[in-house]
Image (cartoon, rainbow, N blue to C red; front, side, top):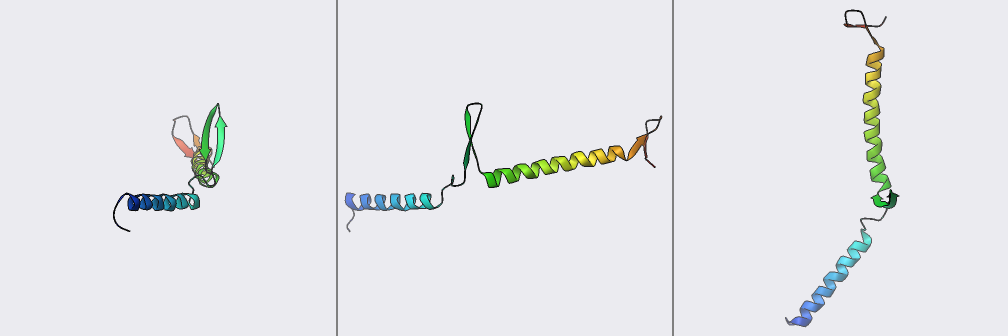
Length: 86
């Protein structure tokens, strides 16, 4: 096909169709769940977001439990110095 408006129009249409097929096959919001909180809508990807939230929560609880164990296994005498509990 010779250069001209018909060729560029055809190429634009083919590019658009190819792009539309790619978006249809690889949708970003494929497994997204919409959640409404206080009148605002948020998107959440259950597999990605809950895993990340679980990792953060587990790490936080690990730190809290570690500090609790340290506190429970030490005893402060009258001088203010921590000594191991026997």
